[in-house]
Length: 280
Image (cartoon, rainbow, N blue to C red; front, top):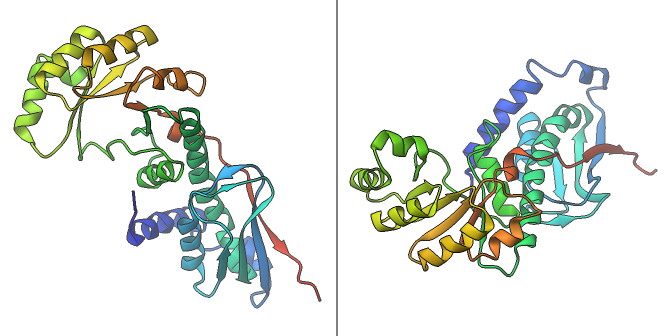
């Protein structure tokens, strides 16, 4: 998944307006003409993501700042690894520091957690998917971070695919009616439906669903579902997925495993930016 420069620029503009507002009053303590060199360091192992956002932060503040990235998105780094060397006006570097690190630490967190899940299910047939449980305003950025970690994107929002859930089914009258209605309205969008038991699974298969989400199935029922399906449609597992059980879920022969934790249960990666004394 790729974001446009315009999308990244607008996201950064909003973030800077939130943080800097009318200006950095503490930064006024620093002499205006003072130049400085700084380094961004990762304090823990991580998968890096968000370099374009960090670059855009400093670009919008001061186009004359120089950034020399030592890594790129998707790279795995170790503790105390150098990520970027920056140089230019000290005031500009200080103004952009927090906003740039916020993007980097958040997106790197999503990429890192995703990589953990992907590694755990390596050699199985299954793929790790994200969900819509994202930080408001960072939907596209976090979904990009998932791809940097080796995961795959589910639908981007409500507008690009059908995902028929329990309340939709109740409103439509049945699984079959909901799927038929979706196919009649938009033939160019994929139709996925959530089911809660094997009987509903069979109805969804017969009605022509393209993807079926198995909601909170236990392991024995998951294995039964794979056997019943016989590869007719793609099967997705959702609910209660963790690092402790994702491997055994993948080994049932399921196609997709969606994990809300990739984007909502993240802990920011510990990064820091420090000024460096120039040797004379």
